[in-house]
Image (cartoon, rainbow, N blue to C red; front, side):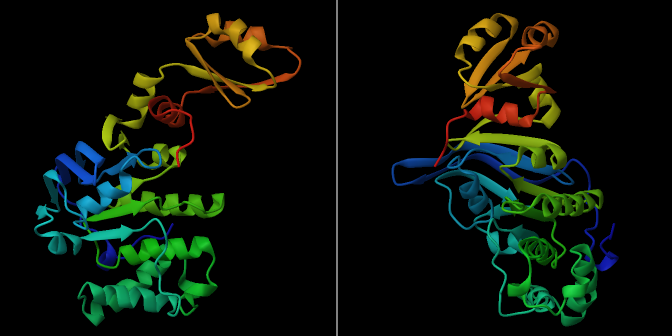
Length: 318
């Protein structure tokens, strides 16, 4: 796996120091409270996951911490700088991967890196020293002179991540970095993000992929309607919120079966044509399902998606 050359590698920061802090931050748009008395702290070297359904306030929180919008109340500190008072200075030490790519399609891969480096005031020699390592990081060495419009979605996403590293940031802010990618591209980006973390990078990540959060993040904050509803390490949240195995049952007209299985489970939920049974002792329930015609079932450990759905509900959000 390609590493980042010394010129483009983050110098590891002291452990257990906060690079980002929000304290009792609120934001309104008209009469709507979008962020509601939110407090969180991101430590150096962490991959911190900010999770929530659509409309939970994640994007507004990112805009607040970058100084792109002003809070109604509360205090923010980013890279040691008060926000929004010194947001421009703090942003010089931050790399941002937006939810949607904003690469310049009229330039080549390498030109996008060079131009972005100049936005940060980097000297030409520094940019030219960092570009080869970032191309290697993104596995785009052979496409350095390709037009961005000719790249696949996965290539563009990898270039966007590489571009966010041109200033050797203290913090990498990533808003749903793998949305819309195929599994191969998603796994490659995960591999690259793990290498950044291994080199001491700090990442703030929003994502709708619970597998992504479980693989990458060592601390999570779940918000809904702008309020924090849970936080902790992924395995701790799974243990505290679920604390048992899950049996998924698939079939038609499962309500009668749900009534039959309910006494054997800690709780049961219906979602579409799937019955979810949460069980501390799965053997009796599995025995009741064995050999039954017209149904299929899957027995698995609880995961972060179970936690997310328990906390935020299974109904669709617009």
